[in-house]
Image (cartoon, rainbow, N blue to C red; front, side):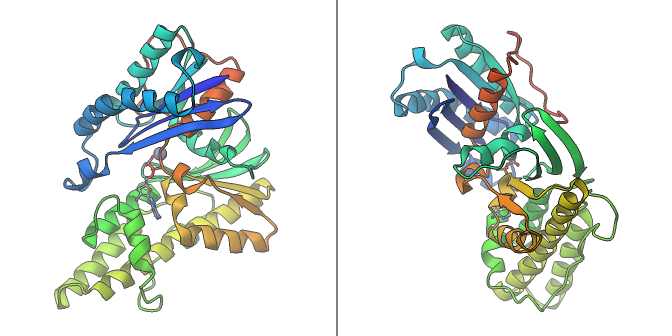
Length: 335
Ligand code: KG4
Ligand code: ZN
């Protein structure tokens, strides 16, 4: 079976073809970052328009790159939510129209299910059950995964998502959008001993997160430095370092706690923030000491992409979960 996957929930147009026996056949990604950069965040209307322009050309490119023709596609999966409503509508109507024209089923996929199954595209893949840490621009969640479609939410952010906190901290430091990779880059030059930022919620029992206090602490630090003189590159690096350390150690502590609580020893990490090298290293070291294993998607499949949607769609197809013909998207959709 060849499943086409289409992702348009935010600011990347991702398309991929997944074959249930041979694995990923081809994938293509178009990022709108340049379109949104001057606004310091994603402008929903511009995102929708750009998805309209890019989706069909990417579908053609991917089908050709896989050495297939349209007649070889057995199902079309698309992100049905959560995300920006206009952007989701573009992917959903395109996917449903293609499926109708080709006479094949269409499948609406949950974006976060796509992220949490993305490590299954790798050769070294986890077996069920495992705990997944989903850390993206819109979500910070710990989920127990017992199988495809068997998800139990263990904890989540009560306010900002981890990626959102990275993006906001970056903005305070005058770094471009999306800020996560820029914070990570300059933090390498930062002095780890200059500032210590609070580790939110770690004394709080349970597995929920909160990053708004850390955001405020970062802003207060930046403002008090600015009162003395304009920020130097070293100031920015030191703040970035303290901020990243605080987020990373909070995430690591909660992951360890989640594995202990669930008596599991496999952790899967997915979503844009899972590309963070410091987070990967600290998780591997801390959990490694406890005899636990950590699994990640390849860096290109940590952030939004079509491959994870094609894979999740293939699993839904195998489970016989095909949708009706009406186009339904869910901008807010608990998993
Ligand atoms: O999963 P994703 O591509 O899109 C959403 O569904 O949100 O995640 C994007 C988020 C952004 O907030 C971005 O700043 C963050 O992931 N991000 C990072 C890194 N790379 C991307 N955050 C920290 N360190 C990174 N290396
Ligand atoms: Zn995402």
